[in-house]
Image (cartoon, rainbow, N blue to C red):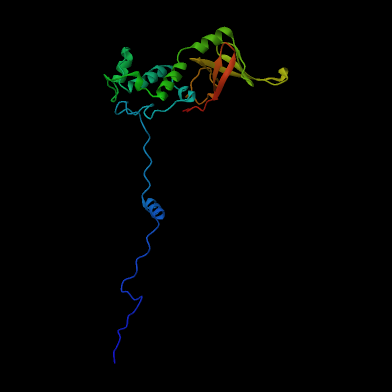
Amino acid sequence: MNILPLILLGCDSEPAEAPAAEPAAQAAAELAAQPTPAAPAASTNSNQLSGYTGTFASDPKLSPADVVGWSPSDFRVKRNEIYARYGRAFKSEDLQTHFGKTDWYSVSDGYADAMLTKNDTANVSLIKSFEGDTAKKKATENGEYFNGGGTNLVIVDGTHAELVDQTEDMYNWSREERYWTGLGEWIITWEGPATWNPSDSSVRNARLWSVDHESQGVNKTIELQLQQG
């Protein structure tokens, strides 16, 4: 008798390979498995001197509220600090001496005004607007009335002002007394002591005014949140 060998089908000793993943699905899985990159650090201007960590280190754009609390002597120094952090040499001996005492300043032969960023240029203009006594002189001489389209500013004399809330009935307009002073092109009004001191905790309801002396209009007002001791 002839014995035919048995052939067993589907009994391989090794399991069959799984079908390959679709290319798109495989790419998505690989991407998901990768770690999320860390957020980049805040950028700084690469042209500024190494070691500078002052007000302008991260290239901020300052607002009037950021500047109004500085003392008059701070304005000039802070404005020139913008240039000093790039290594500008100063003709004024006091500025050169001031920055020379810092551990970050040195004169750079490669300095150029073109190194300044857009925010630097805006900050220089803003700080300049707080220097001098333009608003103080004009408002004192003319005893001006500025139309704010709602709350109006009336300069009574060299130290006193009134805020007038305008209504349809002019006999019922409300009036609030304030002290005032000028910083450059700006006017500041407040309640409390007669002398402007932004660090004095008794100073209340401080407001910054940008006014147009020719049209006697109010460009804008800013309610100040002062850092008081």
